[in-house]
Image (cartoon, rainbow, N blue to C red; front, top):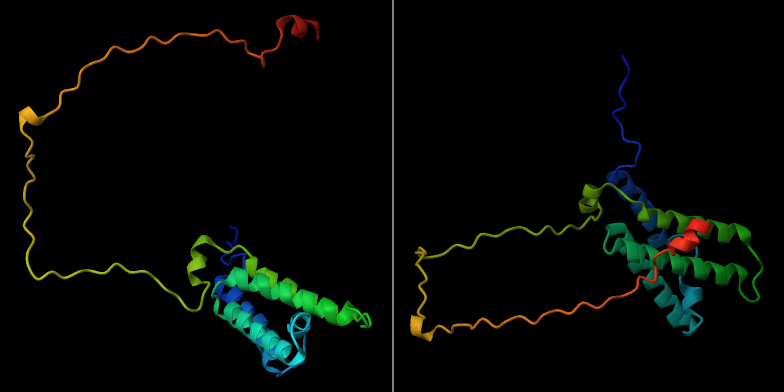
Length: 192
């Protein structure tokens, strides 16, 4: 008698949620300054003054990390966060005047790859359990104060007001002979 395998080979939605929370918590910790890592400041510094770039970079990283953690607009948030981390890391590690630090760039690239795992296709019914904050539409029952009595709808049109349509003869369709340009030529087909 063969043993049956009860466990699924795919990662369950709960496991995916836990991994997503772990990855997003790293980005939130970087944004609030608890740990060191690449944030969005170098990317924002290309068009903002340093003080404002620090604020915008940290706020962007925090908001996108929170959205990934809670599953709000998960795919767009993960994609934008991954792009921001990739380009910020590239600017810091390979930008002008920077020494090439492959190890730090590799770490950030690995985190971006982990973020892209949130795109992993899960079971069709698991999409409902993907977000931590759920909104489930429910049917609501409207209470009426009085009973509704159905009534019959009767037409008020009189026979004299009815417009009678006259039958008109149909036009005769003329046939036009056309040549099929896609047809194989039987003489050429016989030769080849």
